Image (cartoon, rainbow, N blue to C red; front, side, top):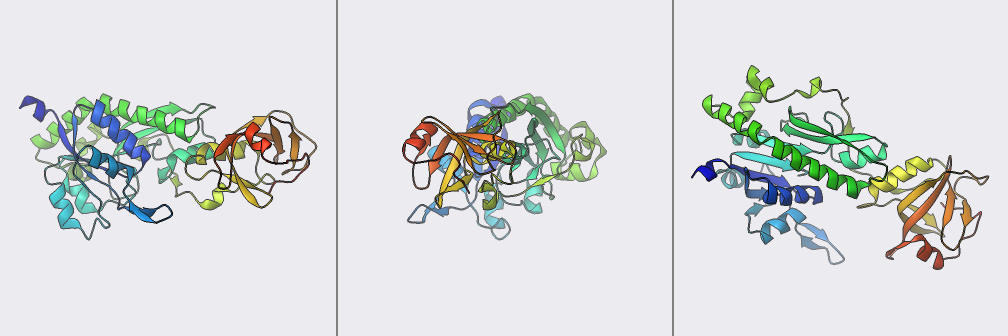
Length: 342
């Protein structure tokens, strides 16, 4: 009986790989959070046959026999959702992808907490990991906030910084942010139970507490009191993928490669066909070639003149082909020094 009382019955909201990574780690490592149900986004058509495919989070739920629903509308399916969450004390949201209506915020005794991979209020919105890499930031972090009606505006329960290293790309950084999120949850155990006990003793829900009670500051920090400027991110545009050697610096292109390599890798055109760059480095010397020209070609490497310097691609992928190292790429094409790449 005592063991059960030391667990917080939780509904998990999530839909992408970042959500899945955290969900798996919570299931294995966080002893006080009991995931009793999962809410994810609806199945989507994928592949050549456009067959409906569940989210990675739903696949995990099926595999682990955790009850799961994927409502198309949180508002229209209110009765089903309220019945689904009726035994839960808390919600935990990670990259769910939908706005949470107020009735859900009010329905959990402990509220819904959101794990957001940025130092809020910086980078609210859909793509904080990619955006910090695109902007060449040196620091990012994870914020654990109480969800409120505004987009990622909720008060901060816990927050930790992370230094972005030179070699970090979106895959590496995401893993580090997952590690940091789990560290925060482990460190927050006593604080969660203190907050839970306070609410129970005063017959409050987290949402009422947040809106009306001055003791709020014992547990949360308003975002306005944190040292980061408010900024917003959006869904990644397909136009971001286009590399312009004439308009972009070598560093800007490298940042783009690091940020977008997983889902929408950046590309240039070679003889009218897309060539994605999945890994590259900046070559320290400059050349007399114009931006967009191939500045040097050997059997093992080639250099491209950008707006301000030379970029050396290391891993590439031709349209419809598998990714290869630069040596294999060059073996399959005739690339000439001075040739323009679009």
